[in-house]
Amino acid sequence: MSNLKDLKKFLLGDALKDDQLKNERLSRFWGLPILASDAVSSVAYAVEEILMALIPALGLLAVNYVGFVSIPIVLLLLILVFSYSQIINHYPDGGGAYVVSKENFGRKASLLAATCLIIDYIMTVAVSVSSSTAAILAVYPALDPYRIIISLVCVGVITFINLRGIGESSKIFGVPTYAFIFSMILLIITGVVRVFTGTLSPMEYSPEQISHIISENFQGMSLTLFLCAFSSGCSALTGVEAVSNAIPSFKEPCQKNARHVLFMLGGIIALIFGGTSFLATALKVVPLQDKTVLSQMATAVFGNGVMFYILQLTTSLILLLAANTSYSGLPILLSILAKDHYMPRQFSQRGTKLSFSNGIMFIFVVSSILLVAFNADTHRLIPFYSVGVFVSFTISQFGMFVKWIKSKDPGWQYKSIINGFGALVTFIGSIVVFTTKFVHGSWVLLVITPLMMWFMASTHKHYFKFLKGISMFGWDYQYKESPSADVFPCIVLINKINRAALKTFDYANKITSNLTVLHISVSQKETKLLQKQWKDLKMGVPLTIVYTPYRDVVAQIMKYVSSRRAELSPGENLTVVLTRISGNGILDEVFHNQTTFFIEQELRKYENVATTLVPYFYSKRSS
Image (cartoon, rainbow, N blue to C red; front, side, top):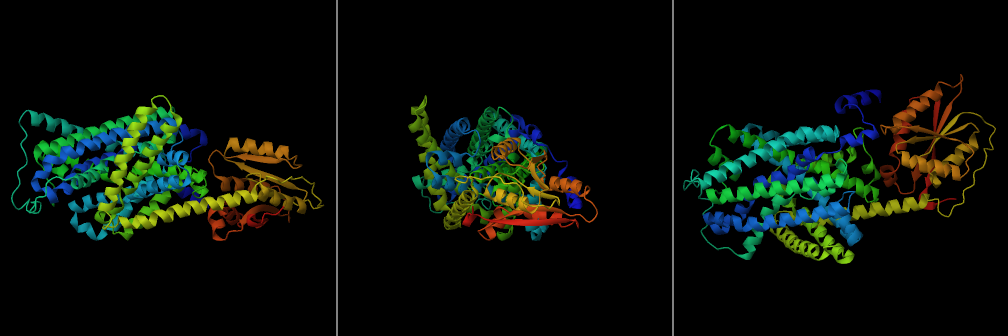
């Protein structure tokens, strides 16, 4: 274990204490690029998505309608920013659409919102990494056989940096994001100035370049076509919800900082998306098979100078770094779900660097599986992308609408109108996005979504059954002095006061009168509650508290056991008594007994230490 700890320390750095959490939180300056990377990267190709939807029906005339589609999207962006700012005000613990729907609609709607957010976050990683890989392969086509390996290395690097803590990852990922934002703003300002001074002319294409986009059957603009283009352009809005999910990641006052970051994010998206829409219309630019709309605009505005290459480089980086938004938002959402007992409780625990490392590893594993399964092909992954975020948009908007109607807070009339309109628009967008991508694979979401909701509901049911089985409610426990004349040393580990823990204590108390009750404290608040409960039960054995600011429970137990071993007389043994939860098969090993397993494995290394496991069958609650 020491070698493993040394390797972990070498890779991740020194562990952080609990009181250092405030230093790991995000400021507004570093929080913006961390949580804006997904939304800003989406803006980079949103205009191209609009054109791709319009061109089959309108041909070259599609560029004239970009503005008609972009303006409603910007309006929807403003509505979403307003809505999520209100969510930040009223729900300070994060969770976004999940907590809004839980309060206003109940469990089923909240699980649907949570499922959609999880899918969207995971797909953001897979799509972003595969897009970045495609950009690399466009420059070095010979690397195509290594597409999957390159993608896995990319997602591995992002995971590794996030495991080192928010403080480090924010600075590493923040600089390229700011570079892209400033490059885009410079592109827009320079382009707009050149348009109005008459020094920037529309693009000229050869017949061969545009042969694939000439519409032979001109259909004209229709409502269906507009909605299709609108839903495609709404890719610019993905990532807006991330700030409301990650409120606890900000420095105090966290709500104020989160709200300011949301406003800055909304302003940046509106500026970049609106600016690129204007330039695309002014330049009459259309997508080509070998050139993106953005690269064509950069060539027209900057020529082939230094700024062109800087923009291309930062664009490639932002496509990769878009994945980092998921690493900031999803682990917090999973921790909230775990505290509500809809996910395994391991997701609520912070790692050595104070990040929710189990959530980070969950992202790595699932996104890696998707990249391998779909050969890191962006086009094969896209059908699953953005559907979830639109559904979560709709649920959160409608949830806030219901909240205003119920609470009638000051200004509830205009707030409910704004959120009601936003709910309607995003609901239409959800339907359009889902139906347009249905035949391309989004139908799978009809299977995945219910399965994930079933898993979360089953997890909650399991924990409800477990907590009921170990509850002290209705049990009048009476401490009894040890009847044993034996004095061999014994340690019983206690985490919380419940039936399982007291059964383990009673067993150890019956076999020896030389008993130590040990509690490894990772939360001073919970430890104070434990001490009060221990005192109220009038336990005749003192409670030994060992506080670990680094949350390394197993290491502290080993350290304490080692110190007690040093006190043993020749031929004497030390017994450590642990609780083993039983009653639900493999679920017990996943949800409950992992710490017990690791403790037992470490204790096996000591020849004069015996381990005793006391089973507790919570499904047959014994008294």
